[in-house]
Image 1 (cartoon, protein in one colour):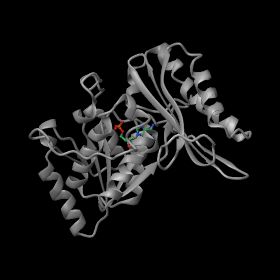
Image 2 (cartoon, helix red, strand yellow):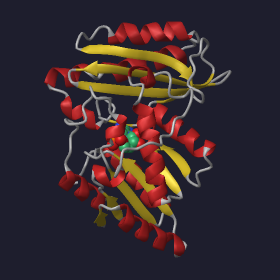
Image 3 (cartoon, protein in one colour):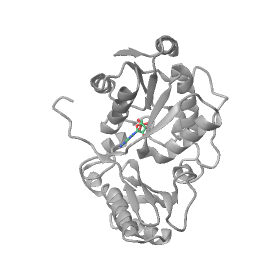
Image 4 (tube, helix red, strand yellow):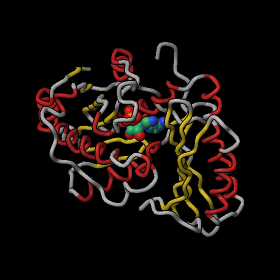
Length: 301
Ligand code: AMP
């Protein structure tokens, strides 16, 4: 694995790979790798010749009140993890490399960014799409891998790539969970003991909602009440939203049918946590996609 920190070096490696007919796969991240990040790298490794991972804590997607300065970082640990996953190029730019001058251009995806996390974080998704568009330009990936943990982000980036005819396939990868159900997140590092335990209420509430739908409930309000009622039993968990939305356009639904995203966000201690599941509801069947539980890591892995 090579580590590069300038866009110029990165471009040379990626141009050479494409010129040789190789397929370039790309995983954009903010680092502090866990099994969720690693699953993206693994899938990229299987499907590409050259795998590029970027590690950049993007100031543009944090509001001034948010946790940019405190965001957890571990470059040495991340480099070791990326190496273990067979990553070819780790791109670790400084902020000045990505934003050498005040930025006057930004990418905004209308509509999909207004609800869910966009309500509490109105500038967040413009920061994400702007940096992802820049990183796509630097890497020139054939395929880019995003986790379904950030379901709204995946929908927004997919739409950006389609609307702008970006020559990249955006691939959604399964949400990875801890054995007790907590969705893996770099921000879980903020959770102190009691908060860590309380945080599992989010995935438990999603499971309870899935059970309701599996046993025939189709009223989104009822499912919403199941979610909020269960999350309210944990005083350490301050709910931001629990919503039942159409999986493709993220608009609220009243009746649960077709592909539906059930998404929650909450503050737990210092951490803002999100979680979700997708339901595929047909006339006679309900498929629940809650993601996968991380395989235990081997010693030193
Ligand atoms: P981040 O470093 O938090 O910006 O995340 C980088 C990528 O990893 C994004 O595409 C996330 O959706 C993905 N990711 C983060 N956590 C998980 C998880 N628990 N399961 C699957 N993908 C994840």
